[in-house]
Image (spheres, rainbow, N blue to C red):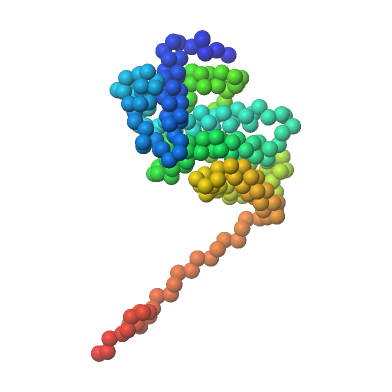
Length: 250
């Protein structure tokens, strides 16, 4: 496989600049400071490029967060792949949550910005595949990371659930979509509640909620939950007085 030094100089310089801009942004996200409070000018000064050049790397400032999520989820995928062959899919899922909790405790403002950005999006972002130069520059000590697809969590977690079902860790016939939604609710919900007040509690809260989640899946034995019945209120008969409104006397 090619090494970083086998790549063209231009590609290496572009990857280094993208990462320098990202690191400059992440270093400024602390306390109550948001990405909106960080100017393109100060990021470019830190990365030693002209302000006009910034948009050659990121069309919008918020694309820094998309780039961060790409790198972060790729690193999680590498950690999952690097597990011992005896490791289970459940172990891999819990590894993802544990790693996320550590990152949240170390850089709570960064995760808060990512969650806020994703909540504002009308449609999910569709970034291009990370370049080989980006991968090798960001993760020089992650052998094999250049070959991993950039799945993101919405690609990684369903694959692990499929593996868990195949290996008998989940009940036969479990609704995979519902199982994924349950994991996603825990993944995003716990930090949303705890990031501002007690980021150090995210790891134990994740463990607690995952234990409840696994137990619930086992108890369901793969049976789908009974759907709630939605009933529409009956319309009043024609000419009948509406509730809360007196009918006028003729």
